[in-house]
Length: 130
Image 1 (tube, rainbow, N blue to C red):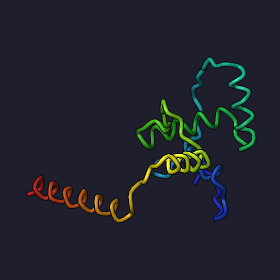
Image 2 (cartoon, rainbow, N blue to C red):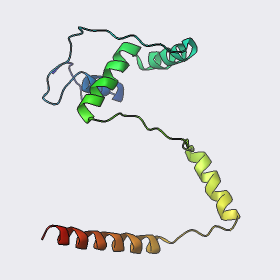
Image 3 (tube, one colour):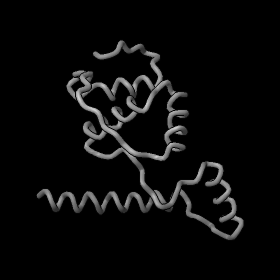
């Protein structure tokens, strides 16, 4: 184990541990190369300010990102042209839609559709695996 873990470790330290540990439990501690990136100085300062609150620096976070990419075989970013609303914004949006006449669906209706989808999927799976 790279770092001693206590049962009450917080998420930041758990993420740090995961970033420095591979799937087999081995440690990534050798640093034998460096990278250089260009970025807006204001963005850099803002990022460092946020990371400082977590007790992290850019090097640690970049290493965490790269390790997660390797471990998960995916880029851990959510890219969207449509930013998500905050929970309060979603509630206000739903209230406005209801006030404008949106009726929605009953839970029974949604569950019925879900049961139909599951049944169709099971039939398709059974046909495929016969």
